[in-house]
Image (cartoon, rainbow, N blue to C red; front, side):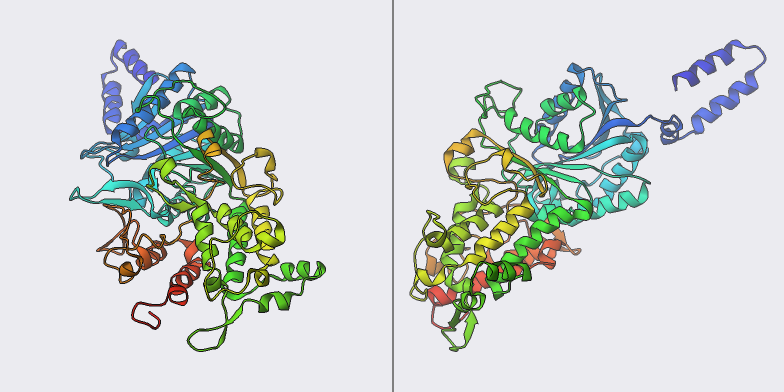
Length: 572
């Protein structure tokens, strides 16, 4: 544009050219801003970081902090936008304050009109159409060899970018399948477009359900199994690292940001560097991990498939042919081992596959061991088990005598046969298949110890890092992905008919967070007890539609009457 204006100056100096000047000025007035921006082709940068920051909520101050930390890193490293370009969409708490910025070493450049046109640029960040509009523009106008999309604020499988509704009383979320659909649309709109890395700056986004839903729309996934502290992801550290080494691959960038995240909160490897913080000297229990989706999502799909075979066995006694062959090769009588789980139904006397009812204590105990975000870590706000630790604990509890594992069952029920009859090699074999798909090289890894050398390099897991508070607490065992699980039996809603039996009301609730299902119905982000699976199933998660997880939940609840009896007698 500066060359254009200099051309106008030259014309002004030339006599007898008034007609030409008028034509030029008329062209300048008529030319749309967006056309002017695209008239000058940009060279392809080495990296582009696109930020989708929903801050029309209580987190606007924290969002601004993250933007300022990014700007600080770009300024200090004297970042060249031809090498690393940063484009941020930020929606604040006021009407008409949706802004698009190019973040540079010299500050923010407001390019909202170029992206969205003139007029009120207010956008609803929970609407996938807003993401499509932003990314269609950003990917076309600011191309790069490698790219990362950073999504700020979220709540596990419930969705991302909590946005105030018109009443100001509720917050709505973009469902995860809405995010996946938006990216698919962008890829159709912009030739050659692709996001190499999705990084979630939101609570509990390191969930197996989230990863599975997004398996086909990105190559790498970065998130935390716990709450993200107020200061968010390590924008200052990571952006500095990226500018200083813009030739790093997407996988290297994922590893770098996971390491930086733990370092930023100053409680790993004795580091005490005082970085800028909203909360002075915060020492948070943090963990994060990076996962490789694989071609067409095959890596994450393999993790879920191996998890599903575990559920197949628990629910129906079904084993994949490879497990049967391996077991028979080890001299195991497969039929006899499966028959041990046939048990007469207390009501009908019919022989049924009874792993779930008979092993409910193991399921519950394993869940308690695997919980991420217990009181000592994060004030008990989040109760989502680590999926690897849950499976590992199931194996240990079921086979501790046969395999030498040191954790015994939490207790027996009158319906449970002697433990010696329940030694079950298939649970451990299925666990090892899961570990191979997940990324661990051997089965001897204890749940509380993390060692990067234990990765095979072939599984879905690329890297995981956790602070020393988690390492030494013996309280939580994050390995990269958590999973939603029914609330503990001491957390029933007060109005539930079982509350008298357990004699304790719900210990926590989520207030004012929800997702839209259909047009008129708003369902809370975490529905209580048996209603939670209904909401979980209805927000478009492929993981619930194509797997047996929901069936396990149903059986988990139905098994209550087998163990404790139904109030008033009979089956609910």
